[in-house]
Length: 254
Image 1 (tube, helix red, strand yellow):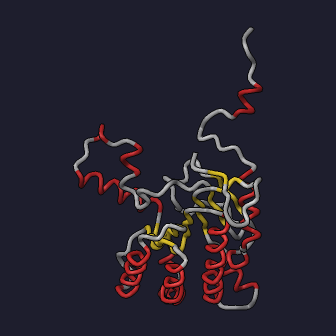
Image 2: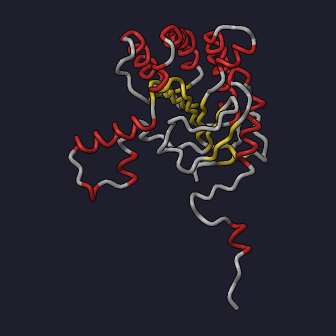
Image 3: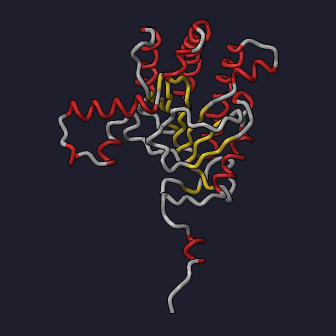
């Protein structure tokens, strides 16, 4: 089982801390609109909040944090917004990566870099290389990422490798995903009240627990993260198996 009892920071004994938390950071635009601000102001507020959530994850003892930063579908947004998001991404790398490195955070990228402007590609690769040996927290950034595109990419890689159909198992297939070597998420959080998967980690979240909150991402703080962890701790993860409660209630022979 990939969850474990956390013993670090402010973790309370009753919390069962997931090894891997993934977050769909939704609601930046609506957060800004509610304050009479442009959408990009919401995205900037969202990036500021990310630093606080990373710190909270370290305190709770979470080992992997995956964030949905930019999807393959986001290219269809207005050009000004897309260009602004790319600029914010570059600013975040310049501003935050040195400190993340000092704090022992390892950065990984999942998704495609094709179509991303060369300067941003370079900065992403440099951030990955700089932090590759850090172990305190692995921050997985899903940027220019789509779950269906990832599966198609994996199939193409398998075909290119010349594997025979009978050689392809679930374990082999997982090795060709962007997330190879990363444990599947135990808990997926989506902010802003929306209750959709949105093409996020379609393969990896097959047995993840989901937590939906109406709180917009810029307002999703450490206390809100703790609520998600408390909800996760109350659940029994079955992985397709019959629960212990169901087993105890089943009729017996004799």
